[in-house]
Image (cartoon, rainbow, N blue to C red; front, top):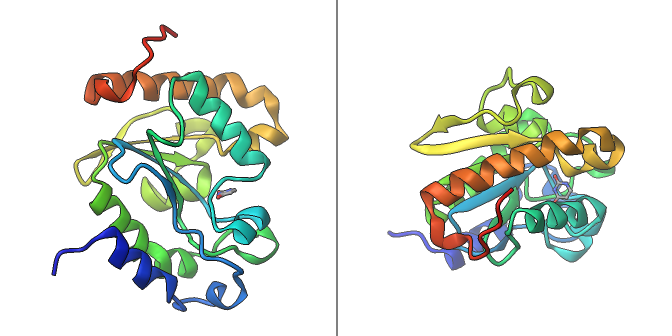
Length: 195
Ligand code: URA
C-alpha cells in the first residue's frame, strides 16, 4: 500500500507507543509545505505547541520565523516538525526510548516529503539524526549525507534566546543552508538576496 499524508496523520494521531501519548493535549505532527525541498526538525513540542497542536509557535518559534525570513524563507516554503510529536512533561529532553518510539512517524514524513535538505535544530535532533556523538558547538554548520539527503545542524532557537551571542554563528549556518538550497532547488527562493 502506498503511504499518504492523510494516512500518516491518521495513524500518528492514534499513537500511544510511549507514555508521552497519555500526557499530551495535542499531538504536534508538523506544519508547512508537504512538498518542501527542506525540512527543519526540532526536538519536541513545548507548552504552547502542545496546547495548539502546531510546532514552534512559542518564543523559540518566533525567532525561527525571523531566521527563516532573513534568508528569504517562510513557513509556506519549508516543512517544520520535531523528533517527538508529543510534549515531554516540563519540557525535559525526550528519552532515547521516546525518540525510538516516535521515529517511524518522522521517517514516513521525510519519505513522503522527499526533501533535498534536512536541518536539525539543536542537539537532540542532531544526535538522533546525524551522529550520537554530535556536539552542536563543534559540529554545527557542517554538511553530512544520510540516506541520500544533505543534512546539517544549527543551534536550537531556544538556545539562541538563552544566549544571543550564538546568533551570528546560527545566522552563518542559515546562509550556508540558503546557498545549498539555491544550488539544489533554486525555484524555492524567489527573492535574490545576496547575503
Ligand atoms: N522546541 C522544539 O524543539 N520544538 C517545538 O515545536 C517548540 C519548541
